Length: 82
Length: 478
Image (cartoon, rainbow over the protein chains, first blue to last red):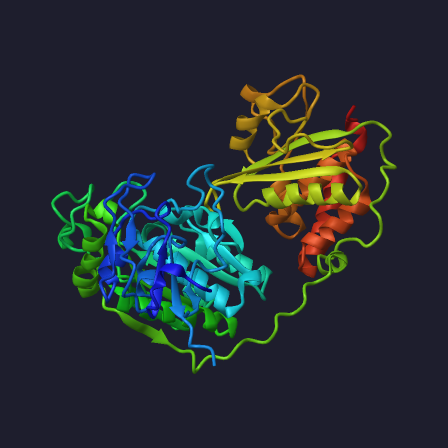
């Protein structure tokens, strides 16, 4: 899958801002510190988590610490095709 | 251009949309930072990856996770408070090839359901329990739980849990591991990502234990409850790690996987057609109602002391009525005592369907002692039959609109060999008076209910003597 905004990083995080409840656990768990809480509010009135857009290493820890099963997806760059 | 593959996303085992509410159907009902969401995700991932989704049955408890069935696309049963382990046992035994997961919080499992989980674990039921321990009653607003930490303030321990007043936090994992029944028990934590990844492995190991048929497995999760703890989610997670893990040591509490073997395949279910043979029911069709063309409705009350055979007398009437092709009911009503105390039963023998098994207006009363006579004689319908074990009816409770027989049935039974046959002598008397039932179903019921040859022989004589002592001509029931 081609992801336009992935910048060639090892990983990419996709957060659904309308599903996120703004608990911040993913931000706390993120090793490369590439997640933060958005300034804007979502329709539930929470500041959703947001990916800064570069620097994700695809470790997946944010996925396992996120309590909302569908709010967050992690992608990993595939090995270059031979 | 590098390509990207999905590494982690919502497991297939969770529904795409949650239909609990028309809006917010993409979200769980859990608070921000709640541990349940994480446990749901880990459990769903394990179910999906182990390929057991189509044979998994999840038991939802009472507590915040009561709605688990809105999220998990598996078989679901939501059960009464604390009973998840008992229901899981039943589901597993009825469907031995299913994977049964009982999901419970600490209020459900460690408080109201402590007996169920203890015995389920002790029996080594081949189920998996997911036990989410947040040390408080979350759903009801933060009362003290058996698992509440010492010093922890709750609405019911406002100055903090006090050992001398409230006892110590209950360590469920250690407690159950002290039993020989369980196969695998581990306590894990949601206190940081590293612990969450270890928890992920523990769930898998527990489910694999069940899949291999090796017996009871339980994973206890130390889980945050930010809302009730009044901490923000990140601090609540830290609190799990810094405080809860000190009180509740993590790790494997018992692992007997290597020493366990799967039991043999359960025997196939007995075909329903075999039941009459097993229960020794008559194999032929019920006898036709040759003894009565008239509609028949006997509402019988049998009453006496516990131990006099009151219930057996009623049961004999009902069983014989069943063999005679009647609709019958037998409703025992007795105190907790096995001997003495009062005992009575309601029996209905009816040629049409029975509306209620309760006999409040009997047309026959079999009173095995005086208190029972006094208690029930006023309720008997005019024209009804009363058979009383006593020389005569006490003057102050006699009625002229009833057909009453009073005889010392206990002495008669005693002279036959045992006063215990009193109930059967009275049955004989009643049958002779009432023509309620023909002889052959009485004989078949007697043979079925009286197992000992010696007593059967005595009871046959008692029945005959009862009939002789109260000749049929004396009364005929309309």
